[in-house]
Image (cartoon, rainbow over all chains, first blue to last red; front, side, top):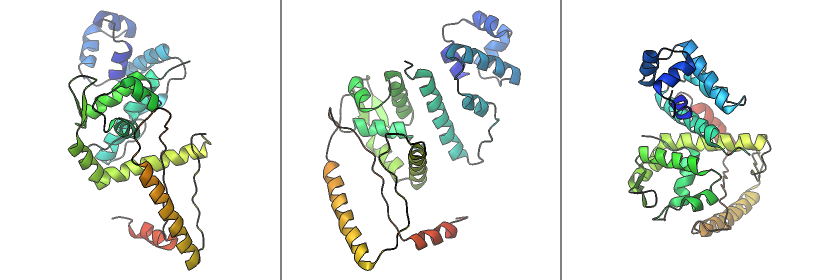
Amino acid sequence: MKTFRRVYSKESLAELAALTNIQKTRVFRILNGADLKWKEAEVLNQLIKKKFGSNFSDFFYDFVLGKSKPSDDKKINSREMEKRNLSYFYFLTEDRK
Amino acid sequence: MSSLLLPERELIDCIKDQRELNIEEVMAFMSFNKKFILKIIENLKTKNILHFDSIQRIKLNQAEIEKVNTNKENLEEEVSDILRDLFRAYLLRKDFVMDFVMEGIWMSPFEEKLLQCKKAELTSLLSSMRKNRPKVGFSKKLIVYAGCDYSRLSRFSVDSLGS
């Protein structure tokens, strides 16, 4: 969600609702931390993809949706999560020539 | 306690001993763009490793860095990551990896002594270079080397299982 919000930072709540085809109140709840449904996550992912092209890395998406099984070790999880966050941020901000 | 990711460690290495942060200079030393460097700075601030009033006036929290550096779990994670990334880059034939040597060699006692002499030379060279500070024209290299008794490491690897 953070990524989505960063990518679509200028859009208002109403615009986001129209963009995602999700009800405004639901968008508000999602933005405030409500768990995403699978379909909603897919819509958001598609919108991020749309903005960044087809070479969007799916690994972050997979991880967020729990497709990849995180380890039971909480410390490794948090480090792994940090790494993925940083990698993803790098992907979003790297210079494209 | 949070461990450091490699770009965070690299940034700390770049700015240590500096009171003012010159982003352009840091950009020249690191291979990242400004946005990404600011993100790393933000991460380090969250980890309480970096304090700043403004982006120019920075201060490293040496006590916190010391804590991270002396935490065995953190070190194990950091070093494992570095070795994995280094080896991956080597396997992918990335041109920034100079060499990666790992082989078992039989040595006579004389050859062992010879190796120790060479190691002492290398250690002394590295120790003299350690005093260098970031400068235009300098490039930072990561040096990794190790040597050990093959058989004892092998025993250690099975011995430490489950510990």
